[in-house]
Length: 79
Image (cartoon, rainbow, N blue to C red; front, side, top):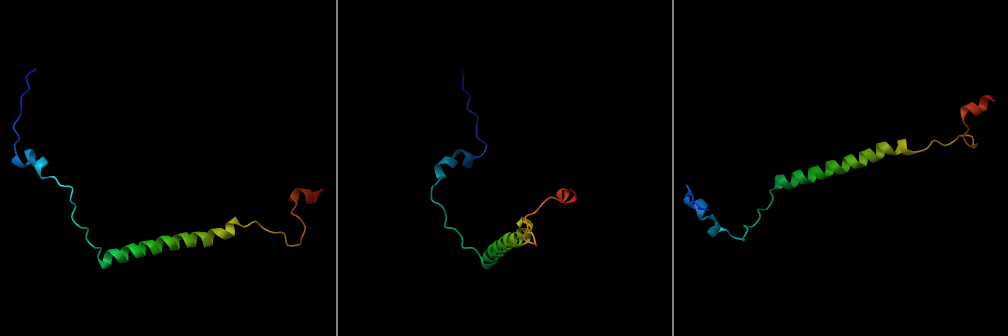
């Protein structure tokens, strides 16, 4: 098999392996707007969870009899 090498059109593509580094630049500090946005998002999520809990709790409660007797089906009353 004859291997034919193709020329690289840009020199920086061929030499890109020489300039790789494992050093990462320092991270930027978040601005006040970024911090405020994250806090606002957290408050909205927590408020949504608390609101769904407050609105959902009455639906999870079972009705209790008012007169102290155990509940009986309405069909049994007509017998």
